Length: 136
Image 1: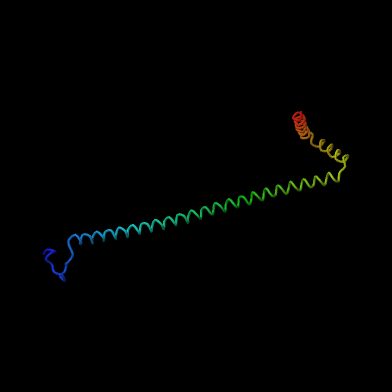
Image 2 (image 1 turned 135 degrees about the vertical axis):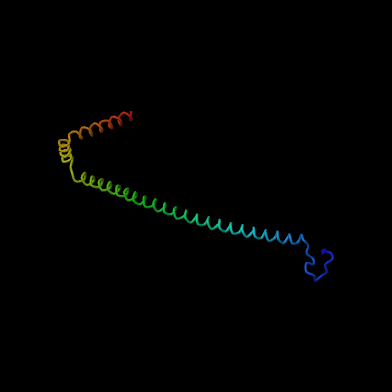
């Protein structure tokens, strides 16, 4: 039967073959939209998981760096404290020992370590000569 000859109330009234094709197309579009939504949701979920994994590894790297800095800082701090203690001991030595006592200890050290004493004397002589030459 023809669409124009159908009467109101009859099945298929107001529908044409093209409207059936339109419904099928809408159904296919709806399915495609649903598939795209699923893919986008899955992609978002994977992206979040990847960021979470990266976040944990970055935090681990930061922890490792902080531990290294703490241990290095402790070593530097220990070296600074050691140097400060030696300087303080030297200050006490200078305060408590007169020039005659210092000369006697230097003589004793030179007799005990003659090679090292000559090397130190040569280095000091070089430094004094450099100092005098640069001031001219």
